[in-house]
View (tube, one colour):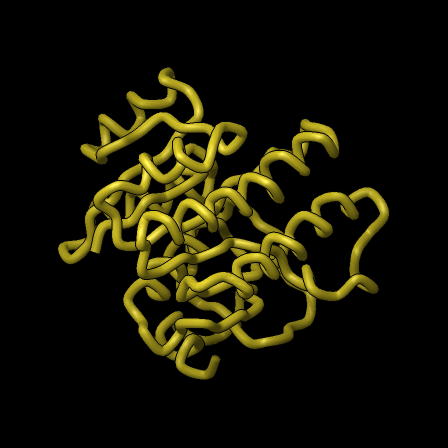
Length: 214
């Protein structure tokens, strides 16, 4: 399986590309915004392509050429305003879904956010982000694509533990980004997680065991 990772230069994206490069049954194409981000992936011996979520659907479709799956783990980042959240986290995701349909992509995995579907959970300062995630998830669910939506809790840069909790609803918690990347790889390998949505935090179960309960 060949997977396009959108948002490959982000922290989850970098972990994910590395895991897919090292996996004997996967190949990966890393999508980045800037040419100066390419050397990192060249050092990993990963194929990479420059394309923008603020560009056209056709540009994204070209980036997906030759791929079987797409992982959307891009984000505008905490240092940007609500305008970038709208154009990247929402419209960028919508264009990626449209491009994936046009490209005949077999699987689309969206990295969302815990309680993105629960407005009572949204904090005032994070409301634009949650709005974007809420509607991006719904656009994917309404598409013709086979999808999995992963909604992790607070992301940390702690080392991976391989111990998670995964369910339709979880209490708020945190999880290392490296563990999120490992869960995404497991989702790519499991047809049983097609058309599923689940929340994700650190927990007491091995990844494979936890995902069997979804």
